[in-house]
Length: 201
Image (cartoon, rainbow, N blue to C red; front, side):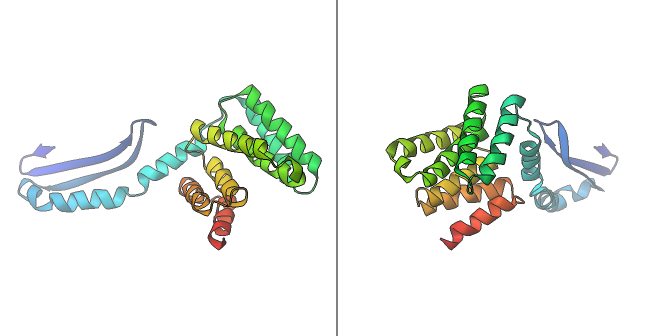
């Protein structure tokens, strides 16, 4: 805006998706200064907004609610069993059953597919005879489906990275997916722990 010999430049970064302002600032100067300070203003804007856009994207991911609450509840119950599955085989079987029910309830629920893949791999540890090409194929199919459904779900990348690390021994792909998971959710302790495992390997 120009008023006499004075000028005000208003700069904003707005998320068109969320209709929220990520950053705003005013610059007051004389008309004569415009060309002298335009580079300085551009540099200040760029240096100030670094991280704001990424932060907004992370907030969107965090606040995204599951579309099917029934499937979400089934996954939560499955996780409760899955976390104890390293101690009792039946818990792993119960977890798999719940994740498969969640997929029936909502075939587009990415996390259900990812946890099905992880649980199938864990179950093969309990029963090495059941660790053939058929199981491997099911694990890979479930993991790929999860990634196709939601490539921005950090837990999917964490589980994919973990499977690549321990199931396939593909360290490069494990590192890639765990770095992606860290980028999407840098404060998740499970992601940090698993990432440290891949670096050790």
